[in-house]
Image (cartoon, rainbow over all chains, first blue to last red; front, side):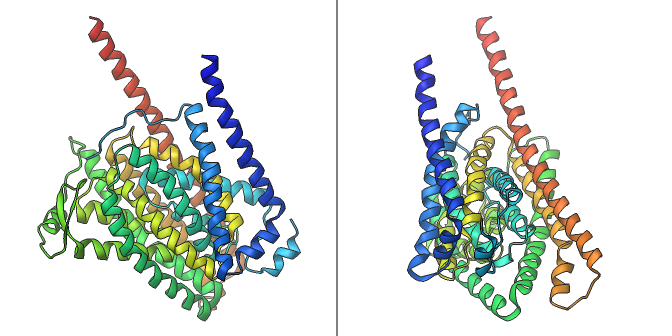
Length: 80
Length: 359
């Protein structure tokens, strides 16, 4: 039982830490980030890539967090 | 943060802790609502951003950039629950991309001609028109469904008539269970994109369009909308990024709240009756429309169309903000409580079934 809990907690903490540190970096370097993200042209990739990166990292954190706090779809129903 | 250095990029607001917390909360509720009713939740987020001073165009652009990754996560979750018609989603999405291109052109012309106040007025006016019409229709439908004894969704007469139209190419959609002409899905998709580029939420046309015109259930309609939102959001974001209109800081803060909210909202759909999804959708649409009406005099004043006293404008602005915040809170509470109630009912039913088996 304890081992199972550890299996759930370790990725939750790891993704959480990565997400939090990424957000901290954004806060610290926001002026530079905004400067490059709004230059257009080739730099248009900057906001898109950042959005993808954060959705992956923070989304993974959220996926581990929600079952941990008891939020899960009980029925996988075929809504037809 | 250095207020002055951001000041160089004059269209972008200075972030303070209060703003950040507000955006996190709005993002969470926006995600919750969009996971539940399928729309981008931007009808919550765009006015939310505008209420802390973000210009309309940047609010729409930043929202669109947060929408595609969030929709991707939501669509994946609901596909796992068996609620997504991928073929319908992709066909609608391609039509929507064309709509987005046209919508962005219109926005750019308005911004160049009338500036931020003109853009704010345009976005707010579109919000009010679409939210009032569609919100009233959806709300009425939800009330009718709740009143009728069998809360099962029925295919509308309009959808049945549409399904009988036979103009090639005809495409079979598994979740609809019928062939529908491409020339029916195309205009719905196009208008979805057009609206998305205008107010950053196309779901107000896409979801009711799929339910009432194509004849899908509200569960499938709201889930399939997430596929459209992803494709359309990605293409639209690239276009907005080219014009340098995305405030990536706002995008990422909102994403932090909404990625958690969207998964809770998606899970909640599996606990509730379909009319509740429509009820929440209509309820939020109508109240947000009311809140936006109160913001219009400020933009009319900025454009010198209707000059007004500053005190009156401040009072209207604050009332608009309070109505919107309470609406969000109420919407979130309805979703969370119905999920808790649904969970409890399932537990009770299981317990009764267990007792019967033991007897």
